[in-house]
Length: 287
Image (cartoon, rainbow, N blue to C red; front, side, top):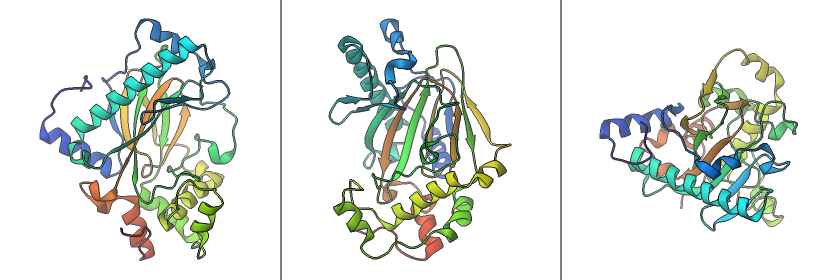
């Protein structure tokens, strides 16, 4: 596939859906996101200041985290809006089964080299983890992400992919305590979370933190699972399901989407259903 637009055979769509839902990374090596002419001035590491991400919200056209002249910021916003549009168009043609449930979230541009970056262990994305965010509970919704490597030097973005989700859950779930009654409402009242957290969010955050904090676990998986995404490539992955670590790379665009479990082709493949089978409990209130 070398275009962001155009019709695709049903067989390709079905294969792509099954690949993603079963916990694989879908690589499109010949699908670049092109920066042309003056846009190439955005390929500079200082654009994001000291932060990790420049973010753009397609829902309100708000740009955050960039440090530049008004003219450069306007150009950057236009480029990030285009990436948001391209990513949405790509998923709607590749994964049409998701059309009614897919919800677009923030767009990111990461200009900094990830290798050697100093941060806290919880924010250290060079450690294997599954995505879960302390202040932004998903209530079981999937986290589907599109990435594009735009590195002008041709350098790849290096990832390590770890164990299947079920193996991760079996390893770390026994050490996670059940949340006490009223905890989720208390955290919402104190504005620790932006929305009400579910038991599912509690356990997913426990998996995220447990994986990153366990250096023995990290070392045990440090010899394999390396994948380099070349410059000019695009890839798609459920980052709440695929255990991953970003080890090296600079200049990547990323678009996040959320999807209700019920909108999946096979909801039983979701982390929510996996954890519910393990705990024999409903982890998200059914509306």
